[in-house]
Length: 184
Image (cartoon, rainbow, N blue to C red; front, side, top):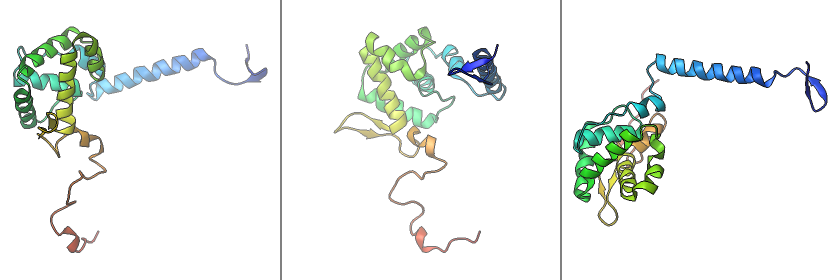
């Protein structure tokens, strides 16, 4: 049977051939991703096994799950954990509750946890927001008592670190503009 589009014969592939091509392409992408060791969301979601309790290790595991990063700076994790613990007396227990919730809801993608929690437990939803704010913006607390826990290591700069310099008052060492450029 000839393909017909707008009453005229055409050489377009039937929809089943396009569908088969897309399925093959998706399977190939997953195979390549697994072969080179890149984690994909489904593997991370179902493999979440946090440590018991609400200590620093549990916070780091929770942070890795929420940010989708396989590793995070341990010194920064400690600073963020300490600052959030001091800012909210229930934070340690909230970390344990969030880890339990995420383990029970393993299929919930990291980027939708806040929305999923909003209807179940508004407090935990806000805690997720505070954790993400601390990691991505480097800020803990609300005005007028905001504490800066990170600047150059805040995760917000990672997507553009190969093309942009982190904004500051000086783009290089002091008086860098007075030195002659090196010959290339």
